[in-house]
Length: 131
Image 1: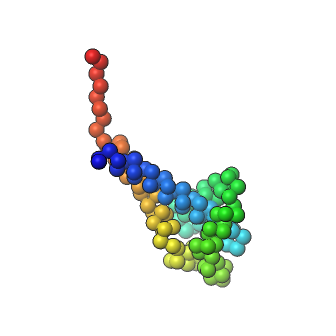
Image 2: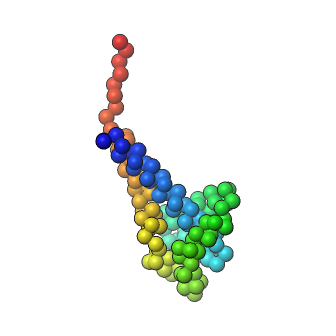
């Protein structure tokens, strides 16, 4: 049973990271608040900026702008009017009303990847000899 925890942490961590990149790239791809979110992300937090720039780059590369943007509108589209009305606190409004899955993946992805990596580095290695 012990052998499953490290791969499980890494698989869940990368899955959460992929969802976060899709979600934040979708928000950055929307016409309503995309430019505002890209502008405010660099001053809000480093991880948000990394998710937005990387997510938008990957989504543009794969050509998923419409689907990711529609997913973001479905999740947080009700906030777009409030975000445009108060652009300086737009990211605060977004974080306050962000869905549970997006918030869990926002923090959980990097944490699970770090935990899985450190656990893999700390696990005892087998020693093989000739003979």
